[in-house]
Image (cartoon, rainbow, N blue to C red):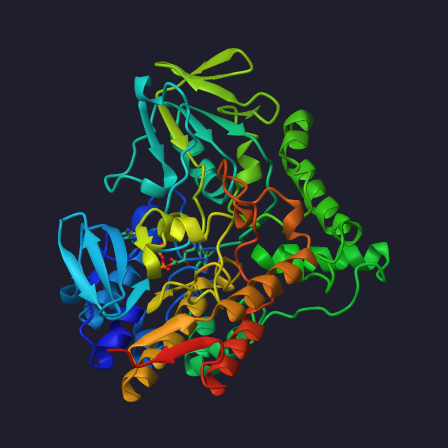
Length: 518
Ligand SMILES: Cc1cc2nc3c(=O)[nH]c(=O)nc-3n(C[C@H](O)[C@H](O)[C@H](O)COP(=O)(O)OP(=O)(O)OC[C@H]3O[C@@H](n4cnc5c(N)ncnc54)[C@H](O)[C@@H]3O)c2cc1C
């Protein structure tokens, strides 16, 4: 939406193409019960228009899905974006025509658009991942994926429900489903760390204070490693140097604050497994303190380091396992074998259900791009170019695919940040670049191979200094069978990334080939 708005304001003819029948992206598709933002609502919103951020009223510390969807609709109406969107239309292919340096974009409606510039704003978490369970088509009950939730909602009352998965969507939905269903069985492959959100209504005084100087609030957030939480103290001392009492006090403080901030208890929680163990043990002891049944509590205790899989933020997740109608089934050693007409089979035992909810996540970062037949110069398919993992320069372009930009693409900070902030930064960069080219009568831009190779190498070497490569996370594509194991987001920090992007511009778009072509 912001890309469309921005390019239109620069005088370009812009066509948005969207699969859904409305705006909102993630918040349009993910209508599952309990869906909510993990970044605070005063931060997870656009900053490009002051009147917009002044007039919009958030109600809770962490906005629920419906509220963010209303916000997206408000933005679409306020800036009159709908006439430039074609809804209920999927892009099926995008082919670069070398003779004209234009992209030919074909849709599910059979139309072909010819475009000078093609911006893929297809989302990092918008291609759902549904494991290939044998027998699913024979299941007699209803099944749903959290990322494709029906608009009409799902009535769980009196139903025997299964939730498959214990990632972020499961952790958000399980407490709500458990309150409605007759019974809920959770199938867990990997236990995940989750920090309480401590969600609640926003205090009017707090909102007033931020709105009185939103510019400053945005600035301190934009200058952080992840693009959010700038007002909270980040400690720069070492976890190893602290004694037990200091660690306890610090962890208590950050746990009480809630959400991702727990990882900022000390400067070096992610420095090594030995450093990390203190924070992980604290979080595991919290689980043991909440969950009454010791065996269930142990199953819910993760065995990976904390923070190398995306941290979850919950409202009553672990407490839900104290309910009489909730049961946890460990499928780590006995994977789900098949779906039957009545339910699911694991460990040779059949569990019967009326509804199965697959909270099995997404083919993250590359899934939505690679599901489009994108062909660049010399008809090279993007699938071929990225066969061993995505390769980009700054996550903005990939060599061989001129005039094609990706928003929050692999190789950019993206999912490690407050994504609205990252999206705005990309939109600003891309629109400035296009403006520069038009002013200079240029119509061709392509990331240079050398610049791309260096960027990929830089990101890989940075990620190897972290604990990220050690976990089977979706950051690495480990949740999708056969996906190359590559750490996809840029791990060097949002503020450093922005500095690099600016540096490229100030050095005449260094690393990009820009030309005027006939
Ligand atoms: C459940 C969930 C919770 C999240 N929580 C947070 C959070 O707390 N904080 C945070 O920063 N981020 C969060 N995210 C990430 C979230 O995706 C981003 O914050 C943001 O919404 C991304 O916006 P986007 O426009 O780039 O992509 P999306 O919102 O994913 O929109 C992409 C759009 O492209 C459309 N599309 C894709 N392929 C095609 C095609 N071939 N043809 C036509 N249309 C297509 C899709 O229909 C979709 O509407 C969350 C994601 C999920 C799934």
